[in-house]
Length: 193
Image (cartoon, rainbow, N blue to C red):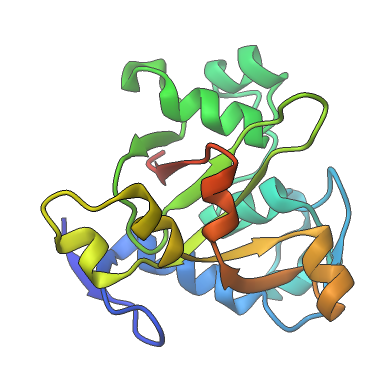
């Protein structure tokens, strides 16, 4: 795996694909995007205008699909057709990441994230799941022989799309602490189409 320095607040290296995903995620910050459940991540809206092509409305899984450069509606992938009627959602991402690799999904679970990986937890008890793109992991969390889970979550930063971000800032897409993901049973996954 080729390591690429992604700069800014990220002290670690990542894969070339992870650097591209993270750069795309950060490029969507600052457009006053509105949170809208079920919106965003559809390739039919993409041209050369970047994030503006999404009509400035999205939810978290639509945002992650866009960052990964894949349409969120993938009925062509048998796993997603069976798991979610073809849709990439938080629940289908978790199922995909936790399935055997030969299930031919899009995400592979990883225990220690790198910038550009996905952090996700599934819908549970009638509450929506959530996902985002890992932007920073504390250097020592990766280098320590046995980092504690609390340390990883407390040093994590994530670019994500949420209603809470929109209420606080007027822009649903923000780069924030990822500590709250650790309280929700989230997992890390790498996009590997």
